[in-house]
Image 1 (cartoon, one colour):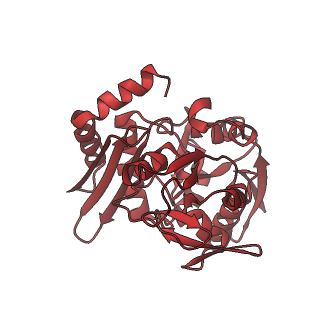
Image 2 (cartoon, rainbow, N blue to C red):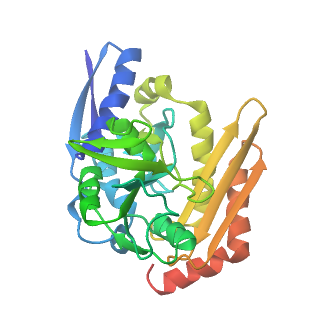
Image 3 (tube, rainbow, N blue to C red):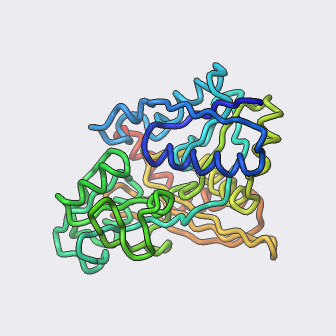
Length: 317
């Protein structure tokens, strides 16, 4: 029996995602044995500093890419939003499974919405993108940076008025029942935020299965779980990301919604200042080509996004 080694971060969410991907692969390829290899990345080791200050979400991927290049593992499962716009030489995204809910979620103890939270409420988030869009809607609240895995951030809700997390992660963990977050003995209230108010991170809700670009047998295997519609959306969003030249050090987001029947796609995108005083958003409909993502990026850059990025580069993000 052929054995393939699959790299993943060690967090509960990462291993759960990987288990779900491997189950899908086993269903399609019962003659292959998959062995999970847990890798503690730099991003997992640094818990007391905001990601934007220590190199961004690429810290969750670089150690795993090294293992791929060294052939310690044969493929790797990532959250797509952690994957940089440019991969390491010799590697590629071999498959993108069907996307989960891409929305962000506001989680509170008592069912408050973003509009009903008290003045001065403290909202925890790990994302500059979320912080900027929250402050644009509620400049009277306080945004506090929180780090850690999904469990750690839910525990921190005890000290805060609200936190924000990706709906997809909660759904994959089986903790979201459509109304509440069922975490251990705690029951929190969850409210997915409207995409127009909180444009998601590029790739949010999707997974990336990365492999070596010359490993044809693995590429053939991965084609069995590849979802065409999700892939088109991700390609357009990542074209936006690459054109903007952004990372998690910059408050940017994009969500593409393809319509394969009519061969067109709608993309929503945002570039914002970290304090939320300037939030540039757009929505555009066009073809299924990655050119749509590029054109939306150029539109926002020309509308003032370039000035925001230049100001952030001068201050070190």
